[in-house]
Image (cartoon, rainbow, N blue to C red; front, side, top):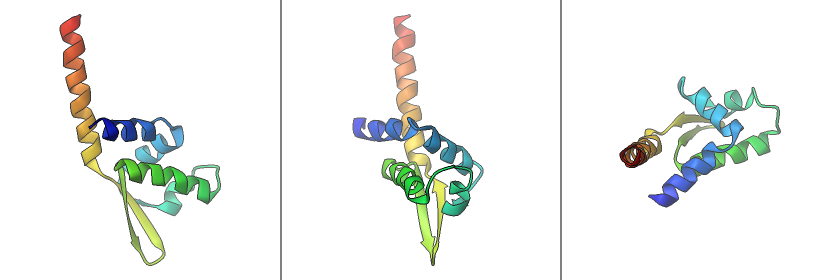
Amino acid sequence: MTNKLDLFFGAMADPTRRAVIEQLASGPATVSALHEPHAMALPTFMRHLKVLEKSGIVRSIKKGRVRTCHLAPTPLVEVQGWLAWQRTVWESRI
């Protein structure tokens, strides 16, 4: 689980990637729509998406030339469980 946590928190460490996750919280979006509000070259933005996909937070489907991204809940649920466990540990120490 540690590797999954490392990937998750590494992905969340960047403000661009957090913004993408916030955009996807409203529902699936194309890469073009996700890229639009960010002032960076598309190849740079694609590297951010690759990090999110590697962490499992984002999944994408390609139909023709259009790639659509959506949030994948499993990593979020796993991290939530880990955080709840940590909270229990720390509350018992206070």
